[in-house]
Image (tube, rainbow, N blue to C red; front, side):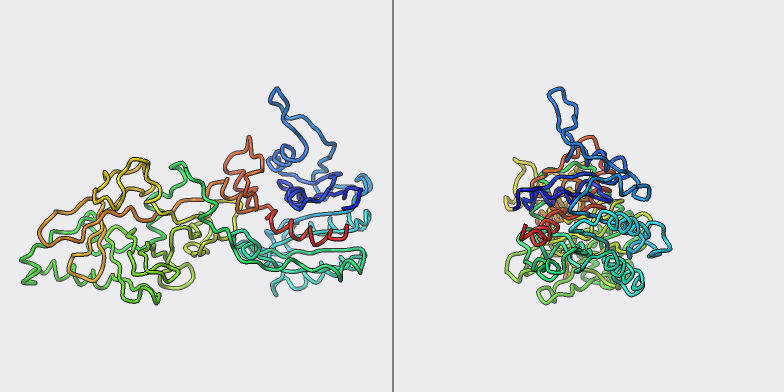
Length: 474
């Protein structure tokens, strides 16, 4: 690295993803200014990059880096000269999750302020980012205009859509990056980082202890899971099937019930589970299968999640990410992301499948002790253990919240705490943005604001890899 620091100017800075990524990449830099209008993002930026906590507990300014505020009001001549301009210009106008208005949305025109400032200041480098939707056919004219404008003011550009999960972090986050150079030699020498396999999965970044408030309420869980109840209207309690009724088949109620049970059986679409069936009157029965996801012989538990795009169900295992129902959206709910999470949103937390058997407090008997733990409500979240019964005379597994009558011939009862779903915590969301060491200071910010910051931010792990390629020769 050369002796002189790289001077940076961060537009639409958020929590300062560019600064975090430069630090992670080991690149010596100095921020001459940034632009951000969200007061909570400004608070997060300042306490992470500009201020340090003094002995009296107050934050004191250690760097003189000005917030220039609203990008549309910035006078480029007032900004000190800098080498690198970064900007994740607002992407809602091009997002498939939004209305996709493009330049018809005023937020879609803020790119013009990047051009306006860069044309005057002429930094050596720029790194710009947006959602993958910007590259769709619907926004073809806008995308070509962006490239032509960058060329017009003297920049050579390489762009590519990169997915966070292909660079070491288990989040399915696709973004288009524009790497811009004043020198054509640097442009042709630059290559985006190569894809790499995941060594860290969603289960690896989960917090060990999580508050009850992050667990979904039963009614929300039911919307995502199988909800099969052959005796609806009977308080979710199956009528007693006696030995005589089972033998003679003379009860019309039993015949009708059995018919509905058979109609409710769901086949699992997987080679490892082709002979398995599951039935649950409670709607949250884990299936004990003959093999695990990797094709092994150890038993595993599965949740059947309603498919968000097609009829049927998807298999979810412990550690899989789940798209939760969004209050103002009819899309995305129910999609399963194996070992990763879906793209983090700014307005809510993603979900994850949790193996409840791993959450038992120390001192509670193991599932394999042959002793049933106390069946309780666990303060919500459907984390109570359940009783599995595979001796009901049909091909399947029945789940009870209360232990059924113990009788002769009923030898298939076993305790299983099963699986449930909870939201990701803010800490976990920031780990999915590359902060695996929890190095970001989120003090004084509500959970709502933390989720918003994470959803709008940069994956500092991926961006640090891009910076290393950009400044390889510096």
